[in-house]
Image 1: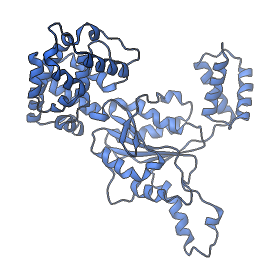
Image 2: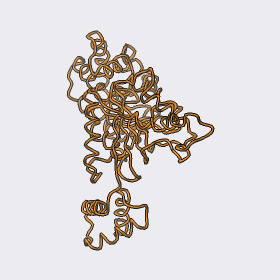
Image 3: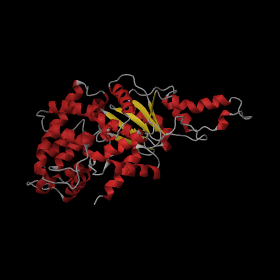
Image 4: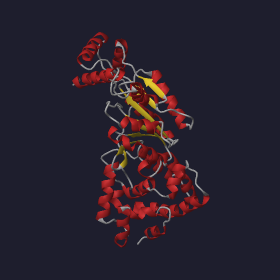
Length: 411
């Protein structure tokens, strides 16, 4: 057995790595690892699967070891994430002890990997954000003490465990937070117009990231005007500053407090995203949401904000009957106020109006220029207006769909 493998049993902080299937197989078959570094087929197969899933290349065993450092949740990684990189000297020393062992094993992995895995090239591009960052910085460290300090900074920036390699998540009622691997890459430049609206949301978000007071936000307006895209663009703009997005479906609103509690124990800043928010008159979930947003005895964690989008200003459906006298309702205005109170719980309301004809055509022309569509202005205007008339009205979404239609006709 290589001494670097035997030393793994001395790990303290990162002892959880021993439970990893690849490491466990490596230890179980250590006496079969040849002097030339050939690995048992079972380990080779596992590493190839991981490489193809995540786009790993080169020294797969070494990369897998770094991936375990990224994802391991232990007292050091959790403390560094929560305390923004500030950890005590004793904890740093314990981490350096483990990293001395892991650094020796990492140097050996090129030989252990053998010829097949040492230069592996995947068929897909890599998608592991935190892993790629750690691999860049890991190459520059020389001592275990330097590595421990670097790792503390890494966990502060990216988090650890299931939070590490993703900038966006969805809440699953059964599994909790699930990372979104292929997140929407929309940027603010992709959203043409609405400069005032984008600026207002960016200012609020920047205050939140800086630890200053910030408001929950409600984005309202007709469908297709860019409300959801604006929220998604925030993460692409501010991910490097620790902003993360968590989308929760209406069916899981009753777990919103659990979502908030979970995120409150992490180190990054989180926007809980409620997309296309609306309630029917008979839907009682709006009362629960109203309490969670503003009204519970339990305060909202400082690292959590709620951003929601809706097609209507008053989130709970009203009817004319609500405003008329009723024999069954003695205090009808109390019921009416309760229905409109949910929207009032959002400190910042931003309206995205439908574009007028000229604004719609401006969006069409800018999109056409980006895609280098060679079409005369008069023809482009005529076809764009016909498209709008035969579809769902004027909006940025309709303009994009029109441009996609034109691009699809090009042979």
